[in-house]
Image (tube, rainbow, N blue to C red; front, side, top):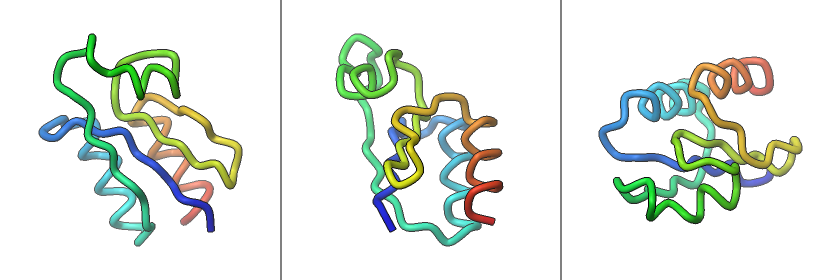
Length: 81
């Protein structure tokens, strides 16, 4: 399986919703913690076109920068549950 990557901000409740779902589904993933300042989030901006988190990347399934926690959780449930 390809590596799922989650761009995350520690303490972010929306990110926690996604990490909880990843744990519930027992999925391995790489977590990249982003800086608190939006102006310093160049890596996540390059991936998704915006600086908000969470952002999910799942190259095996053609997901190259999915934002919005509810959309990510729905995707994970459909793809991996």
